[in-house]
Image (cartoon, rainbow, N blue to C red; front, side):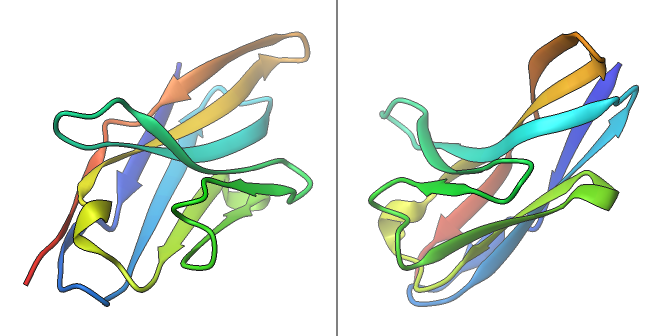
Amino acid sequence: QVQLVESGGGLVQPGGSLRLSCAASGSIFSISTMGWYRHAPGKERELVATISSSGVTNYADSAKGRFTISRDNAKNTVYLQMNSLKPEDTAVYYCNAHVYTDYNVARRYWGQGTQVTVSS
């Protein structure tokens, strides 16, 4: 069994910053792509950013220039540094990871979500 545990959400004023963390634990052989998604009320869940095991990153247009995704492979942890936050960034942020539990057995896992609220 694999678990993803997120932390770092909260309430921040517009223009502020937050850093999200997501640690994977359990029967992990390796992890390929890790990423962050978000789900705002009345909207569909959307991609924020992803990062491969070698560090190649991909960002949604809304995140480019403001958010930075990174990972620590030794700790099976992915981070999302969010700067210049806007009210429209308010959402539940979910961590996602493509986890191999054996050399040829893999599936996607999701965290429980962490609330980010940007408001004055």
